Image 1: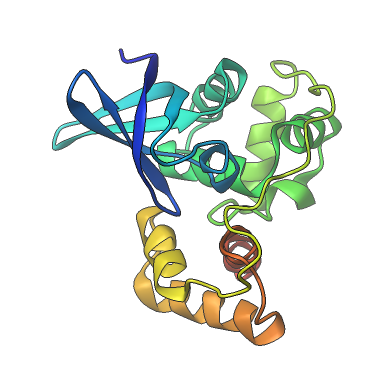
Image 2: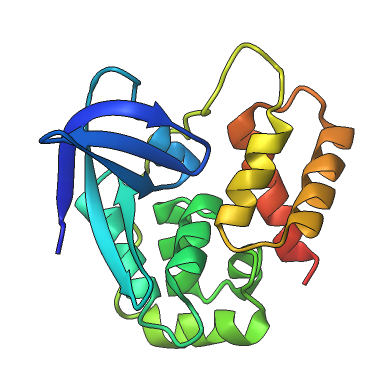
Length: 200
C-alpha cells in the first residue's frame, strides 16, 4: 500500500494533483480543500490510499492521516465506494461529518450526492460509535481566489471524475453559476455537489 507521497507538485486540477516522486508522476485524487494546501512547483505531502480494481490502480490523497482513515472507514459501509467517500469529504468537513454521524443527522449526510436516506441511516448505525467529533478544523480554503472567473468546464470534468454523467453535472454547474456568477472554483464545485445530492 502507498501510505503517503512527498514530492514536487507538478500539476493541480479541480479533483486531482500530480506529485513527482523519484522521477515518477503520481496522479492523486483529492477534495478541493486538500488540493488548496498544495502549491505548484513546491514540495507537497499527502497521506494516500491506494484503491485496487481489476482494471485500475487509483490513488486518493488527504491532508492528514485522520482524513485518510475516515475515507477508509466510510467505505466499510455497504454501498459506499471510494468516489462517494471522497465526495462525502468534499461536501462535509471532517468535524461536520463526525458530528452528523454521532448525532444521527441524516439530513446532513444526504447532502452528499449519491447518499439517500437509507444509506445515511446505515452510515449512522454502523459508524456512530467508530468516530469522534474532531476538534474545530481550520476554515475552508478556496481553490482559487480573487479572479471571480468560474472554470465551468473544469468543474464539470471534476464532477464527471467523481462519477456523475456529464449532462446532470453541466446542469448543476450552470444552475449554481446562474445564482452566483462570481463563485470561485472550490465554491462552484461544492455547491454543484450539494445541488446534485439534493436532486435525488
